[in-house]
Image 1 (spheres, rainbow, N blue to C red):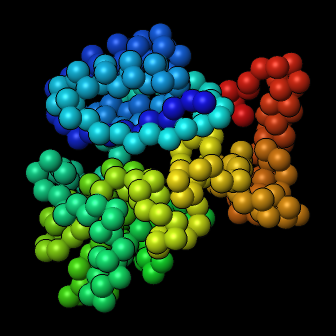
Image 2 (spheres, helix red, strand yellow):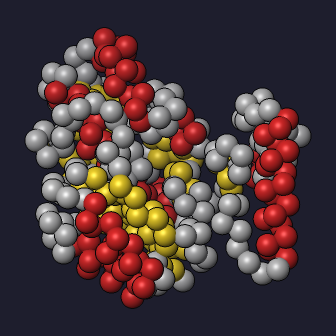
Length: 300
């Protein structure tokens, strides 16, 4: 059984470039795979490995400037969730594209999972899902508003166009692990919204802590690794990825006539050209060939 750790920390890295190579080396030395983003505003990512490997990488990250109080969320996986280890430098660890949005300066009110149900059931509270459309398609909280955004970068424009809908409402927002809400609540506070709340630890912490019989969550929670989606108790759900568009697919989606393994699903069948699909078919052929030879195809 492998450990999967999702983490983020907003802190100030004066020279993030010097942190990348040592962090990559520690991960590789301990067989840890996944994706970590480093920017001047902090660190974000998900990694998977043995218990010992994850502990070693987390110890390295906690020793970075401002990361001593790093918090992370853990779950398990029966197989390695990532094909490789990538530590990348970015302008933002979660891209909103609004300069000056700094959760270290201003942020909404944190709400613990055990208090979330009472908050979002209140008649004067509007609940907003800050995730992308392919994530909300497989699960969300009962009664939540879905902005229908394709990217988190679209959220500020959506809010500007829809803010009048929420006049005199308290705003409660949530996302997968909490990081997008750090920025979205900071953005709304900067826009003059007085009462803004967000779910501490995100959906993952809620699914871990709140019993299913008491839950207001409906469906699956998309995760950014090969598990694809988890449910209550963070157990893996039977979703897979369309290898063409990277959207999650339920078992019934794979049974649709538009689905072709590695090539298309009902959501993207009209989005690509025949030349694209020819490339996808060749990639899928290489994936199957690698599987028969006992290797993992990293492009798969």
